[in-house]
Structures are given as structure tokens and as C-alpha cells.
Image (cartoon, rainbow over all chains, first blue to last red; front, side):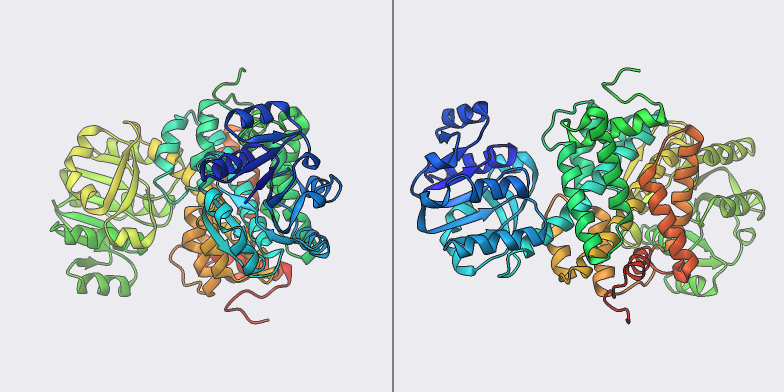
Amino acid sequence: MHTLVIGLGSMGYGAAISCLRAGITTSGVDLNPAAREAFAKDGGAAFPSVSEVTGVDCVLVFVINADQAEQVLFESGLFPNLTSDAVIINCVTLAPSRAESIAKRIGDAGFAYLDAPVSGGAAKARDGRMSIMASGDPNHFKRVQPVLDAISEKVFRLGDTPGAGSQMKLINQLLAGVHIAAAAEALTLAAGLKMDLHEVIDVISHCAGSSWMFENRGPHIADGDYTPLSNVNIFVKDLGIVTEEAGRTGIVTPLSDTALSLYREAAESGLGGEDDSAVAKLLARRSGIVLPGESA
Amino acid sequence: MHTLVIGLGSMGYGAAISCLRAGITTSGVDLNPAAREAFAKDGGAAFPSVSEVTGVDCVLVFVINADQAEQVLFESGLFPNLTSDAVIINCVTLAPSRAESIAKRIGDAGFAYLDAPVSGGAAKARDGRMSIMASGDPNHFKRVQPVLDAISEKVFRLGDTPGAGSQMKLINQLLAGVHIAAAAEALTLAAGLKMDLHEVIDVISHCAGSSWMFENRGPHIADGDYTPLSNVNIFVKDLGIVTEEAGRTGIVTPLSDTALSLYREAAESGLGGEDDSAVAKLLARRSGIVLPGESA
């Protein structure tokens, strides 16, 4: 089963080396030469374009957004390089309606499609322990089971219809985006009250105020380390999808709206490429306080 | 060690029966006859007023807010009923400045004080497994160690200064309040997208979008069961304390502000006494959708 991973960012790279580790023949495509060199060093075959990879049985798409996904799937010469029963697994976070239209175009071209956004962060991706929120035809799942086993700890099967996986990811990103901003707000207030941020994280992690994101991103703020694993721009995109989808269906999302405006303002002030927890820097500036690692 | 629990609500009742279970002589005071009857049935001594309980070595205060705490501590004839080395453990969520002033008045009266707000919810309280965020004199902690052991799984010692415990609780309530409202928003959107809410809770609980509150309160919304364990009015109060304290120190709290306005609007629309997750009903009404257990 020759597997092609398109997009060797933090999640895609993790998926690609997890496939290698499981003994799957794996090619990786990325525009970034550094990512290709690293992947080649790890034992993979690395290419700058999908048009150069042939005989592909399974495609894992890990690009940034829906536009990039459509570009690599439909405008890069991918289809002639696929075997006749190839399965395309789309792990990109995108609007459910977009997932449906991509699935249709791929089905029309005669290939199989799984709507399969992921969760878990870069560390779990490297360990082959992502969670996958997936929907699609059970026979297509069966064909790529070794690949799913290699990259994930848990595959949530959300029915046969493309779009259902993307809906679940949408709900996850709503919560994740609000929780990161809430962690930033809580730790900014704690800093303003002259509390020890590491102690705050230690205590709250054992209390009802905790969240996965508070425990994961809180230390970035307490350490003043905004090395991007996931970045501010991703939540500008993902909460944008959330609020658009909500708007389309008439659902009010006041917390997502508030969090999105914070990520947008952070991106506009030059923090877009920093870790998503850098939304705390924006709150600190607006509050006139200095967080760890920042200068007054 | 004769321990008096003032306020037999969900948390206070849990603390009181946990003390009984540990073999501590325990009296309980509550205005509500039903709470007193239940406590007497469980083997405690129940009274309508603190003035009727004598020879008290340790007081656990579990009333609703700072005003009630000051009333029961300073205007109900408590002090003459305390032994000379009695310790008052204040578990009420209140502003850190309020905790400091109460501590001072109690110290001036010659008694010991611990600032000791709690977390964990009614179920953990009943099991004697609350978390306590506590500050105060180490000697005072030592005197009431058996009581703290009886009611808690973990005591976070946050220094000697009254107010430090209340600061930590403030940060916890900011996060808890925002997370409950975020869970309500996420599940309202999921309902609007015709997703299965129980499936959403099951999946997201394994993903990066999870929070303690999402896992705890989400099922209330999916089941349409708003029996109050903690209620909407408590978060009107607690997020009110958060935003006041933040405002006092010049810290911006956009998510807390947004969540507080939702709890206030929910309370004003008659949901104040329902479970705090009933903020979802408000969002559903504003979105024109019907949640489980509601009628169109």
C-alpha cells in the first residue's frame, strides 16, 4: 500500500513518519525543502510536487485549508498517479459543505474518499496516536485500515456521509479555540493579580476549571515560549469556519465570535505565526501588564 | 473536634456527611427544614441557627456569597459559641479583597481563619473528595487537618496570606464559567447541524476540545435534564466577581464579559434556578432551535 502524504507540517509529518514506522511505503510532498530533507533523512521518499509520485494507493491530505486541498487534489496532476482503487483521506479542517463538494468531485473521478479531520496535536501525531473524526463508505475504511492504524489511536466512525467528520471537527475547533483564548484570559488575569502562573496551572489542572487546552497551552504562556506548534492564523481560519457555518444555519455563537475577534486582532498585530496561545500577549498589552518572557 | 457546617447546600451537605463518615462530631446549620431533616437522618445534629450550637472547634462556611458569610459569621451570635482555639474555614467563593477583610475581623476577634474555597462539584463533595484552594497560617491548617482530610482529596496550600485561596478560585471560576457557556454554545450548534449530541460528547471528550465542564455538563444538555447541581445564578455571581476584580486591576476579560452577559440574560429570562448548563436554552431560543427535552 503506497501511501502519499501531502503536506509535511506538524500533523502531516507526524502521520508520514508513523506510516514509515508501521512499514508502509510512504512518499511525502511539501513545497518546503527543509521538510522534504527531514523526511528523506527519516527514510521517506520526498517530492516537491504530487505529479512526481506514481502508483499511489492511499493519499493523506494534510494541507492548511480547503483552497489548498482543492488545489493539490484537482489542479496538481494527482489523479493519473493513483491506482484504480485508491482512497483519498482528507484530514484538512474545512466547512462540512466544502467536504461534501470535494467528496463528490473525487467520486465523480472514480476514486474513494474519506472525510477524516484529526485532533490531538503535534506530539500525538508524531507518536501515531491522533484521534480521527471520520465519515465515509465502510468499504473504503476497510481498504486503508493499515494506514489509519498507523497514524491514530482512535478512529471515530461517524457514518457513511462525507461532511459528518468535518461537522465534528467544527465543534471541536469551536471549543478548542474558545478554550485557548479562555486560558490566555485566565492567565493574564492571574498575572495581573501577581499570582505564580505555574502554580495556577498546577492547581487548576486538578479542578473543575481545567480543559485539555488549558493544560496543554497554559505552560506556553507561563514559560513565555510561543514557538508555534499550532498558530494564531489557524484559529483565525477555523473559528472563521465555525462562525460562518453557524451564521449559515442561524445559530448564535457569542463566545466563538469574541474569541475569533481576539485571534484576528492578534494576527493583525503581527502574532499570526506565533503559537495560538500568543493571544495572551494581545490581552496583556490591552491590560497594560507584562507576561513571562515579554519586556515591559 | 466539634465541627459546625454552616449551609447544607450541595457542597456543604457533602462536606458535613464526609465529616460524619470520618467520625467527627458534626453539627449542621441551615434555614431550610428539609436540609436539616435529611442531615439529622444521616446522623448529624441539625439546627436552624448558629446561635444554638455550642462548643464549636471548627467552622466550615458553605453559604452562597460574601454577604451571607458576613451575616453568619458576625451577626448571628457565632463567636460566643466557639472554643478559644477555634478555626473558621471559609469555603465561600468571594472576592479576594473580601476574604482579606473577613480574615482581619475574625483575627481581631481572636479566632483563626483559613481562606479555603473548594472545587469539584456535588458528587465529589459527597465522597469527601473536593479540591480545596487554601491559604492561611500553617498552624491553623495543622489544627483542622482531620476535617480537611475528611472533606477533600487534595488541599492546595497557597501560602500564608488570606485572599490567595480566593484568587485561585476566581481564576477557576473564570474558566469554569466560560467553559460551561462554550459547551452550551458548541452543543447548540451541533443540535442546529442535526448531530447526535451524545455522540458529540463521546467523541469530543477524547479530543483536544474537551474540558472538565464539557464532560460534566454536556450530558445535562444532551439529556435535557437541568436539575440544578450548581445553578445559573451562581455564575451570575461568580463571573460578576471575576469581571469586577479584573476591572479593578485593569485587566480585560472579553470572554468572561460575554459569558457573564449570557448567564445574566438566562437568569432574567427565568432560568436562574436551573442548572448552569441551562444557558444552552437561552442560546437555543435565540437561534430558533429545539434542544433535547424542550418543546418547539
